[in-house]
Image 1 (cartoon, rainbow, N blue to C red):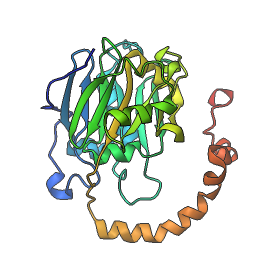
Image 2 (image 1 turned 180 degrees about the vertical axis):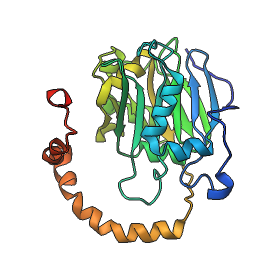
Image 3 (image 1 turned 135 degrees about the vertical axis):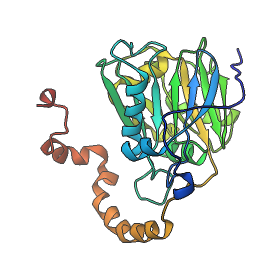
Image 4 (image 1 turned 30 degrees about the vertical axis):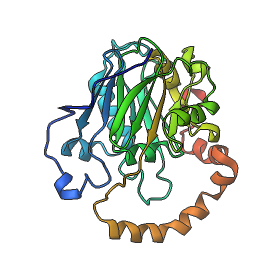
Length: 286
């Protein structure tokens, strides 16, 4: 099966409001548009982000939560075609800001039935932004396994039948052979395909970055979406580039010093601090 689709169509706006692109230059860190993909209909459309949405819901997680709130309800089954899976970036992704190479994923969680949010580092988020999109909104369910290929303002669905069952470490290389040698992939493995409610979404191949919270890999598996591969060569304009550059120069050395333990020991280096702040999920968050 070859999963084809119609050409990108500029369709509807996410919300009403006045464009700020003319004021901030490509929305001051935002590209100004996400993709919406309906796997049941095999359609991909571009949507426009508007001023009051961006001002009220800054960043990937809050913007994704707003979209999830608008598009789902208490009756939405997390593993149903009606659930929306939102991949989103914030305004500093793909800029010079240190530690900004992250993206967020939100959906109704199959683990809790409530809002699920996770995030991951690596190069997938910045690559999506450089490809011309702030995020990707996924609904529906493909008839057979597919993956989404996004490259510099173009998006298409491709068959993933030959990739179903393949481990996440191998996906990057296989999809690069079919698309672009510099493509970066976010994908699921056998756990997500089998709808394991703790399945994660992995990106950057053998580097193994993970959006691991809330079982969102199972949502991806329920939609029969094996992977999203992205490649971008564009740039992201910011509102005040000179001021941003000066701020980055001031903060860079301090940030390098403060994240040394994270670099050397990973997430475990912050466990004591996270527990002290009450952000460690032990004792049912008590």
